[in-house]
Image 1 (cartoon, helix red, strand yellow):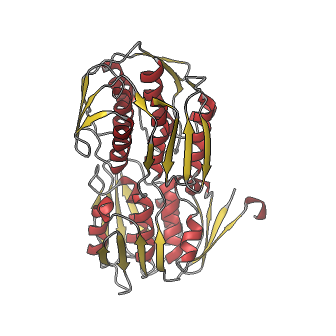
Image 2: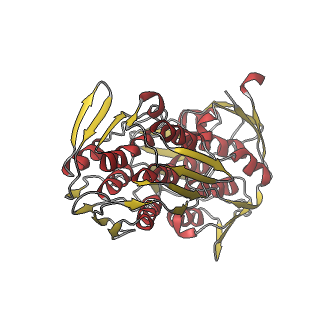
Image 3: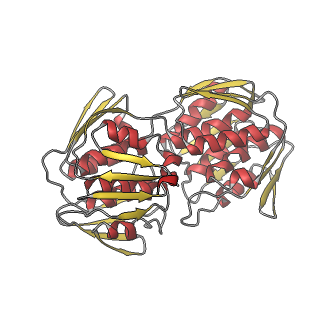
Length: 421
């Protein structure tokens, strides 16, 4: 397994372009199952999760090509509605094929999903929503078996705003008979990107970008093309990389509205933010990091996927800060590794209390999941000495060649192949 070797203490500076959003791509790709023919997805990131989804779609009969961030998915010869364990176990987002297969082909057999090894993230909201649309659903030997001659529109009130459930039901309802209303729907930009793709395919959706979506089912959808939005979590991570090293970086071709909540907290911490057209600059060269509390929330609140990175940043802030995660209550597996780097953090349930230290000290640390891995890289960039971050395959799931991007900004970071240590 690969590792990163990071020589800390280098101020980052320069310009960088953000890749396409992982979580948007993982919804857009299975949405192509809703229409027969070749759909084109531009700005698709080259990530392990994207390749995992592509292999799953290939298993279903989708023909694909992927080059220069352009993915072509041809769905004219779907041969299976069975998403087996060997594909689905690698990634929770694989369950996104459930809604499209069911509504388009009348049945789907999908293994219960896998993914990051933290926290119970049930898919009951997906299944309850599909049942309300008229699906017959059984759980048999670890598989979801869903059947319906044709789904029928219904009013669905989500108890919890769920990105995954919103996306799955939105896709299923697009070909259902009648009108579906989703209340407390997720408003994340990735869901908006998906809804806009469905509209281009011929779906009828009102309320895009709001918490209430009204979908009038149509008889068929047609293949089309779509641009994947930039990845707001990669953007936030790189901005914190600039902030934690007292650097100055600029994100090009990135709409700042995607991360307004993160930008506000960065300004509170002492960073200067400048927004000009689609260019976003951060200046943290004042050498002063203020302690700032954050509480994660559904969009447009502070994203849970930025919680670990913020924790690493606050580890060297002046004073004491708190980080509270209201989305996933046990998402603090990065903390024991940050302690190895000299951080002073105490966790109680879903709340971390961080007493800033003057310096972090290099150590060998272990990645446990995608965003925890990012926090360890950030800490390593700021630490005194040479830090080794092991098991960076987690990072490859959601960050496209992040070591190359950081190197282009002046970081001293290199990937070492598993056979070399």
